[in-house]
Length: 203
Image 1 (cartoon, helix red, strand yellow):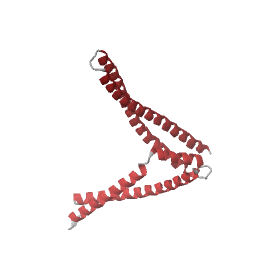
Image 2: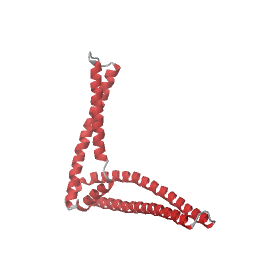
Image 3: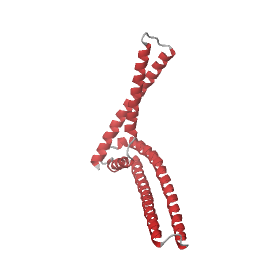
Image 4: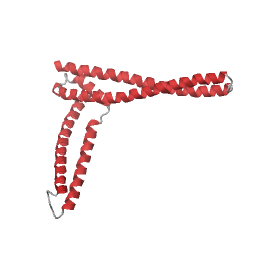
């Protein structure tokens, strides 16, 4: 846990450097946009205006792509891994004398909380969809039993249809229970980590 905490601090330092680079790139992007606008409006003139305009557009595109790549690398962080890193910090920051990073860590934790809220809604939507499918299968079960009871098909056909319904129901129910357990465990983990981090503020 100590080693993980130290690695997390290295990541935070790299993150700060990445943000500095992003800020400089955004300034370059703004300057390129203004220069392109000047050439487009004819404020700046040149014999080779067309080539300069094409060159500037290429540079702007390259800068934008680089910004997007850095933003993706710094924002798209696996939530499970992020929680593990936050937990390592919460448990070892005081011992390793790293409380000066607490504000930054809390900021990351809150951003992560926003991401988790969005992901949680998607999972809840899937659970709602699964519940609807499970209810539909239960209706199909009842309909199957009624159709069999009035002699619409024989016992062998009934058993085959029932087995297929049971397999599908078992799969959907297992998936739903797995998602519900995942939500509960992740909620508890996130709340526990936030409590531990916030308790360090009074240290």
